[in-house]
Image (tube, rainbow, N blue to C red; front, side, top):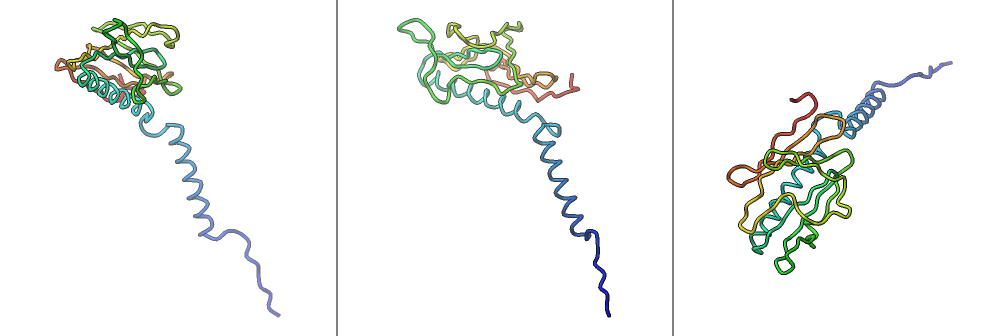
Amino acid sequence: MHHTRLARGFTLVEMLVVVVIIGMMAVGALLALGVVGRDRTLETETRRIEALLDHAREMAELQTRDYGLRVTRGGYDFVVFEPRSGQWTLVIDDALRPRRLPAGLTLDLELEGRRVVLAETAGKLAPVPQVGMQSGGEYTPFALTLRRAGTTARQTLRTLEDGTLQRDELLEDGAP
């Protein structure tokens, strides 16, 4: 009579599969929480604002009209100067539509080295821009900083003396 022993326990392959699955879940959780790596949301929003500013400047040049950027702490929108009425109006263009920042991000604005006190939302504010894009292609000198609430993470867009935009490096926790 042969008695076959039933093996109890896990094989090496089964244990490796479990370890790999747990490892993948841990990496996914860390990336989702933003614990590992750079603040991708902050970088993406800064690049988006930079691209939209360049687009608005090109529109100003092509249409020979002045465009502007109106900034609040939680978002921004674009306006255009209507010479017939002598007033600024919101741009009606899907690319330059009003934007809200993702949760946890805020904006700071400096004009000529002075910080501008920004409203929380546009609300009933008159559509007067703080930053201008003139029909000749020049920007009003400014520095626009995106910040992550509760951290020191920030990235700044600024105009240079030649009238171009510069995106500074992303500064994260622990950076001066």
